[in-house]
Length: 556
Ligand code: NOJ
Image: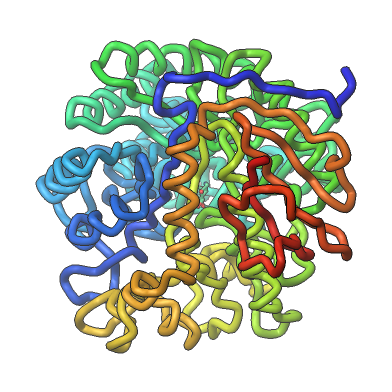
């Protein structure tokens, strides 16, 4: 197929998750109601009006379940309760009610690949004997070597270091090993075990009964492991990951996983309303990812190909072509995303040379620092370019304020396990997880009345506080509001897509969606838009000329 001719037909009036804008809330950094310096559910509820005013359709809450917080809540010790640091189940019900009253749907984060080592199932497994049904909830294996002193295979953790930890058996002797693709406090479940499957079906029902509108599913592509847990065949080149086009390693996107999602989809469809699930699936190429969004599996999967394109015109052109080709083939929407709690904020990522390889590694004060003006300029253009695309879009809290990454966070504050597991070689993701500034006053800029904040904010956050931006029609916040409002009015999320001749890179990328043209200027020369009506631009245009790194929505 001629890539330049990829088109996408409008899907008017379709389900919300095909075109909705979903806003990710990172609970520990959104708003703190009790003054302990850590965000909580009541804090979120108290600030939901500002999200309604922003114009989003749904929120996705990162984990708020009981957890020792070794990986900021992605280490769950009880899937059906709220951690006291975030509140109570009744606080959750209040949040849900308030959100629904404002017309905002609520998706929650499900973490099924691993639990915390403090989960009762893992503690039970530790206390039980090798070969017991309790151990079969996880992947326990005898080690290699004369006395089992070597890990059972060559896998390494995504956070650095080995993916295996040896346990001490009840007789006090070193015993079996368990696998953890992330931190050693996050043992991976054995998804081949039907009991594990049943437990998670009950967890889904628990939250669906409470009224959630869906789930963002963490690391679904890691859940099934190849039988026998063989070695990673090209570990040296791929590390913990995989290389596109090569055989997939035994821990990533195994076929068996699809049957699980089919069951989950049926469960969701058994509930009224349009409940939906979005997979955080790193599966490439997208033609393979399309299998994950077949009509009886996930409703959405994040389009990380788009995020990974790093705002390079050729890569974006290819990513968009590949996306529509793959997802249209199975009747699924593309789910665009530029930010989340794992990657460098786009207002900083685009202000320096930070490729995908380092995007989730953060930026430390010893590294080249991003240019904040250039970064925000490109970020706003990129967002406008993304929000014009048909499909669903995800936003990450704080991007509507143009927040930069905290790139000079002192090491003593770092909490991401990546930092400790790599002895500081990778600073980790704390820089994109800094508490939000709500007002310019106070030590934590309105995040907490006490002025406390679990990670310190950089000085630049004060002047970016929401209350200031709300009053300023030229602010990044006002820009996001206008873009979201126009997107809705023009039906862009449900619209069509075709490239505009002459705007297929490298100087400019331009597409048409439902009569609206969206142009981004990557080149050095301005693009003359004088014959068009300008609906919205990422920066004020001088004389209807679209300058470098600007994007505009225009009409003839
Ligand atoms: C992906 C989550 O987004 C990330 O924050 C987490 O550390 C890993 N999965 C492990 O759960």
